[in-house]
Length: 96
Image 1: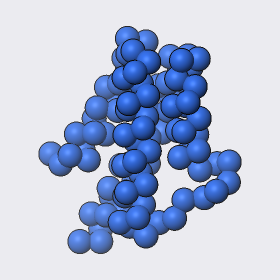
Image 2: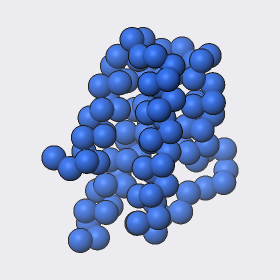
Image 3: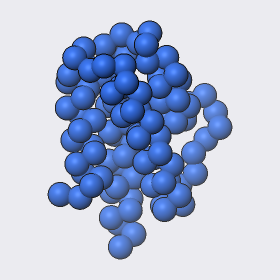
């Protein structure tokens, strides 16, 4: 498996264990997701949106509010990040 695939699996595992993670772990995973999505978008040439529907904006807000998020909100943020990363991985694999 690739590092990207491993990270997607890590996000999905974290989503399933959201109520058992520390706030530090949540912030760390969300911030890694943000960096990964930005890097992958740059590699694919896919630009994000500055609109309120861009997943990076949602992930930034979730990371900033990690202390106040419910387990369901944490799970949703991790699953959104995993979905976007998986989609970008497919796009990158198709470029090769």
